[in-house]
Image (cartoon, rainbow, N blue to C red; front, side, top):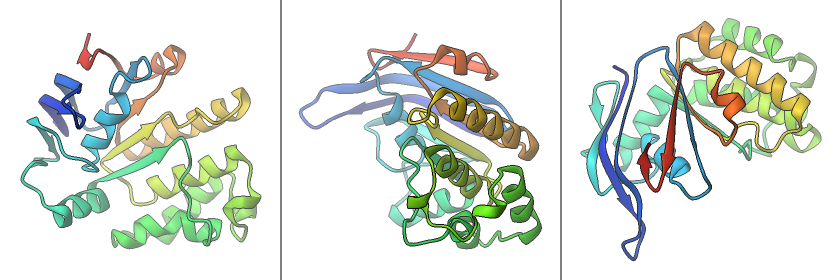
Length: 215
């Protein structure tokens, strides 16, 4: 088991519960779609799994490491070494070229592999865009760069938060196909937050959040 979310609870300041006794598991190589209405806690759960925020009770264990005892340094190391994130907003570094954005996560994790990066660049259709900056790219191109950056370090777990939410239907289909094929090729596990049941149906498993609980 790569990821275990065990009876996790999370409340916002003021005591309003966001996640109430949530449990999930994910094995290496599995893909899981997480759906739910707006405000149901989907993104919150993803952020907790990425060690971007703390939880009130329960435990999240990633690759055999419980998250609750980790300090900021330990959480940063876990994100650097074990997981990668793709967001709806792309979150590329505007001052870096496409080539630099693609390689930065792998370099920080000491996993630079020029051959793999070249393969990713070609696979994602970015070979002719490497010297350009994010602001000159379309939304679909930016998201392909974000996917390449995430997969360049061959993460054990890929977390994706509405990764096609800002794209039109055509670009969305291209991006989703590329992401899923790269996940299969690398053996990564995928936890994907989406509002689309059509996208959810393409993954191995589907969990639905409602009222802060899996239903």
